[in-house]
Length: 488
Image (tube, rainbow, N blue to C red; front, side):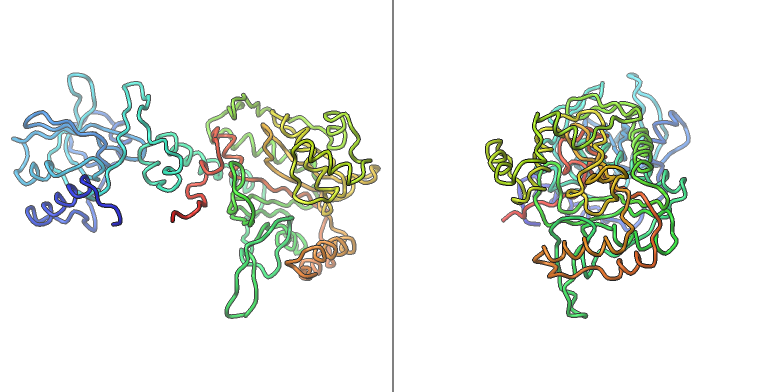
């Protein structure tokens, strides 16, 4: 233990007393049957003894009686110990207990004069002695919390403390689980098959991003943590699996901020004989089911806005929206003029390419103003080289992204299945990459040459979806163990 203060020293002394004086194991290997606290509360009064367990959250001494609040899984119940009704060893044990200790109590359940449901303790067992005190958090009779553990840096580094004392953090974690369950249930019900593809890949692809790389010692080769699952999932389409999805971690060796994490959860799905219109419907339906699971209904509160989740969501064209918002036709501008404009607006594109500057100008003029769920559709081809061209619209592709309160939620295409065109695009991308040195994924191209049916594909940022449905300030709030800079 790296930190020793007076409270920890006192708890260590009590630990020694429990072991040496009482002859008890403060960390027993097993316990007897336990009824969850919530079920005890729900069942109410009973003369039959019940056994429940949880963490001591409050302690009140009144001479020869002690009241404690025992908490577990979001529910709490009062327990009552009276000295003359307990064996001497049990009472002595109760005197060595601290807030944060985990105990098992057994006894009948009654109501006090004030109406509070209470376990009359007949037996008491220590299941885990807490050596590090929890922050004291006070809650009134109406459930309002005061003096909360609100140091965000500490919350992220010590999530166990955060979950133990902050109900909103615990509820957000539970909501995330329910949201993911709802997404899977929707896809399974609609005949999608969940699959697993490699996390370590000899070639990375499916998105434009910097990878994490590692050395595969046995093979003597460089491998990469995947940045997307797209190319492997499309191989399955070519193999005759018409509806597939994967929900898992992707990794991008890029910046960290309130909406970006280098390790994030993504849901990718592909549907043969669908297109980007099919994916819009899929997203709307999944969004509504996820919202129901999170307890939002048809309206979510996010970033101070009431977000309507009623379908159909609004749709705007990329080109028209940028022209209308800016009052300019940036598609006819020369790169030098775009560069000067970006400098004047304080926009820092990732590169000096015309494509990247137009993409950043779109973010500046349009996405920040898209508050309600809005599909931005029909992207220029130079921003969507892996999407199908839209019939009758030269230079425009069948691609969409959805935005809520300026936050990108998903990306979808009518997927390219022309193997000759796809090869040319991948070769151009590989030649432009200093990391890949011209390599292309020949196994993926072989699958396309075998024949992949026309399909729609959709990628959803699960962390951001949870952010919206739980009104989280930062992506770190919805990732239980976010990446943080190591303390020196």
